[in-house]
Image (cartoon, rainbow, N blue to C red):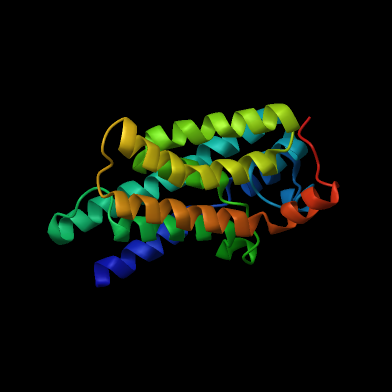
Length: 208
């Protein structure tokens, strides 16, 4: 249990590294949370410091999620030879997203967890992630709402996992993978609750 507790702490700390905040602070000396949606994610960084900074943020935030999964799989194999994706790995993934959303370093005001989730599912279910990425691009291309695209993409991953298992190839530890996908989608939807309200009111910012 000590190793499992360590796993949760490390996953949270990995997720909590505020790359978007640090990039904007280094480039402009500003707090990205004072711009747009108030988050530290790639979209808000793009608004404040340009699209290249946003791209760097996207990649680094995805690396956080992937690193949490890889660390979890490694440390749990030391415990008892568990498969690459199981419920403990899924829980570590949730802690990484929570770390991004509520980083202790920024008084628990972080981002929405989308890029971190992308890194997680690049490791856990890459085929499903590809399907979700297509859904994201279609939604953003047609509506210009990144928030709506993110919500749809997150919620579509469990569906794509099921479709992959049925029509492409079996998904190892499918119950844990779907559970992780549902948990991640729930956290991301929760993080976008203000965006959802603005979408309903017609006041959400569009991505230029």
